[in-house]
Each structure stands twice: as structure tokens, then as C-alpha cells.
Image (cartoon, rainbow, N blue to C red; front, top):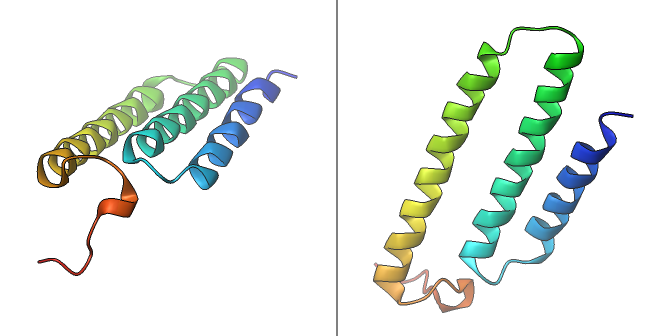
Length: 94
């Protein structure tokens, strides 16, 4: 009963990530939505089972580092190519 909302959020995030691959920013936002649903799922699970919440702080630290890495890649792509469309990347260019 408690886990239905985070699981629906997770599936919706996976669907957006799978079918919307034209812009890098939308891909990053869908990944962050998946991370938010996982955080909610773990938080509910740990609260209901009376576990310690230190592991959630550790996971949040890694998720924030992942978000910063994605944003830095987005900034570098926009500076290098001018936009964030996947179709404009030339993979043969050095």
C-alpha cells in the first residue's frame, strides 16, 4: 500500500527515459525523477522497518554527485556544440 506511489513514479521515470531521447536535458531530468522515486521508496521502507537513516544520507550524497556530474556534462556539451540535441553530435569528430 505504501510502496505503490514510488513504484508508479519509478515506472513513469523509466518510460520517459526510454522514449524521450532527443534532448540531453530531458534525459537528465528523467534520471533525477527516477532517483527521487528511489529515495522515496527507500525512505518509506526504512521508516516502516525502523532502520537507521544514515544509509539514506550516504545514498543522497552519491545522488547529488551524480546530478552535478550530469549538469557539468550538459554545460560542456552546450559550450561545445551549441545545443543539447543528440542528433547534432558528430561522433566521428575528434
